[in-house]
Figure 1 (tube, helix red, strand yellow):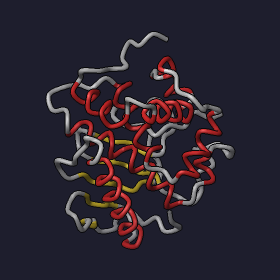
Figure 2: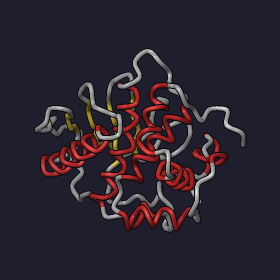
Figure 3: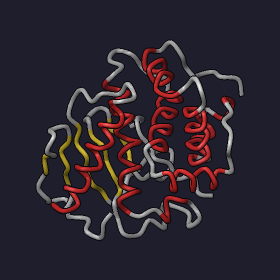
Figure 4: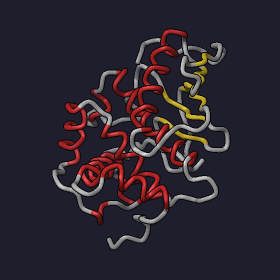
Amino acid sequence: MRPTAILSILAACALVAPLAAQPVACPAGGFDITGAHPALAVSLCHAAEEAAAALEACNLPQRSPLTIEVVDEIAHPFGTCLAAYDCAYSRIRLVLREDYSDLVDPDDPYAAMPRDVLHGTLLTHEITHALVEQNTPGREVPLIDHEYIAAAMELDHLPPEWRGAILDYAGLDAPATGRINIWIYRIAPRRFAANAWLHFAAPGHGCDLIGELLAGTVTFEDEPR
């Protein structure tokens, strides 16, 4: 399995527009889309605004605007990636193309997702990273907590059939706290995401746990392996 991740804070559609495409401001004012054909920009606005509304209900309100930039590839020191959040520029870069075969293994559920579902899940993950940053000013959130929150939110907002496909692909039906570690995230990102969502969905966790991670009263950093 190729470890293709949705990489983030360390740094569909047949029409992917040239970089000269004019920026599009989304209707609610929270996002600008660059590098996309107008029809694709409208679709991305809808997906981004839908994700932001869902995240607000889980202790992650959007506090400042974000730019979503459509690109053909993203270079990252950890390997290939489909999307990335750049906190220095309040920018999410999103790889949109017709052929993802060099980025995603053919048996990975991402390879079979309809393009609108894939775009939505990538955006949800990266918008989550952005909102974690916006809601923790002056505090460096541990990377493992960042990735747990983003993975849990990503799967929680997937259509149930595609969330089930990721759980089946990961071979998991119950969570383990010991699997919430950054090495699993880097080596087997779908397995990390599946475990994160199962943990999030367990009784006593959910959005209350997200709030505690944001406040720094709970962390997965240095959990026993």
